[in-house]
Amino acid sequence: MGKIVVKFGGSNFKNKEDVAKLLKIIGAYGEPIVIVVSAFYGITDFLISSINRVSKREMDAENVLSKLFEVSKGVIDTLIAEESIKDEIYDRLRERISELKKYLMGIHYLEEIPDFVYDSVLSYGERISSLVFSAILKEHGFSCEEKLPEEIGLLTDGEFGNATVDLVKSEKNVKENLSGETIYVIPGFYGVSEVGKVTLLGRGGSDYSASAIAYCINAKCLDVWKDVPGFMSGDPKIIKSPITISRLTYTEVAELSYFGAKILHQRTVEPVMFKKIPIRVLDISGFKGEIRPVTIIGDEGYVKKAVVKSVTYTHDVGVIQLIGPGVGIKPGILAKVTSALNKSKINIKSVITSQTCIDILFDKSDLEAAYRVLKGLDLHAVDEIAVLDNICLIAAVGEGMLEYPGVASRIFSAVAREGINVLIISTGASSVAIYFAIDKKDYEKAVPAVHREFFGK
Ligand code: ASP
Ligand code: MG
Image (cartoon, rainbow, N blue to C red; front, side, top):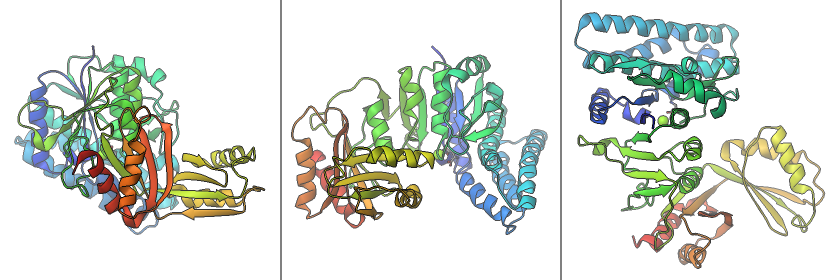
């Protein structure tokens, strides 16, 4: 069995105290591991805003570079005592930052941001944290090597901004390149296309990088460190005392992430699921010297007595309704709609049809573009196209949803008791999730009502 792959996210890199804690955690593993890191906290957002401002000439490339340098310096200065070593790290950091400078200068002169440049610039958040972190590890006596995705052959399908890792093409190279008896530190968030272009894996994509790497090396497990106590029965922001969930299946986690739980990137379970590699979620604030997972995600399901394990929600979706007396029985409408959306590269999150209405769910950011595409189509049976953009989608997730009677009715009775109107319902599309949409203004009442129904609080 391969090493453990350990992912540290931006929330584990908020300040120098955090980084000092990470050193203790790595010590506690007591064996060579493969570490995948995100950018330091807030740096990806900073790069996104900077890149736009540089392209409009509202900001200088130099300002961007000096901020990145300062953030790293803060960490290096506290965790490395020896001046000569610090100087050496600064030299390497300057070198890496000067690579970024070339891209930013290009943007400045072009006043435009080609896709491949955008992805390259954003990858520097991770490239800098991996460089700094691996240098610190070495200084603290760990045998450690930094490896970049392009060096280990983490290949993608080449789609800029939202690439998919090509597991088949990556597996052999990644495995070979990470086979030494040392700790490896790898920047997450990107892989390279077959022609060597940097392609990002989508926002929050380092979890997905780590999962793909775990797949390639047949990892013992994938450990994802967070600053929250694992998966919970509900969002602590609106549920008073949610319960921590100690075990979940890949499918449950995939559905929870799809419907708003922000713990793992939506695609994290995909790669490891193929090889049944467990994912363990760990809470950095609860670290007391031992590696103690809070939630373990694997293949083996179990049905809880109350069936529902977690209630989640998202405001990041919108619905377009195709309304007409016979849309449900007229053939060909969906075919036309889906192929047009596909041509425009717009992703459909879900479709629910009835006799008089087809409801199509989109990511909120795609809603306007999708509406334009659908307006432009000649759809005979459709009298009206309506947009619902002020909704909240709520999902109840748990193994056994479809086998155990009464779960749906308990959910909807709980919502009805609050006098809240349900706009759309879907049951049966997934065997572990029931979801529905309500007006956004009611979510702070609806989500706790469903949670109370199954957890008594
Ligand atoms: N730094 C990237 C982001 O903020 C990737 C990640 O954090 O996983 O989206
Ligand atoms: Mg992150």
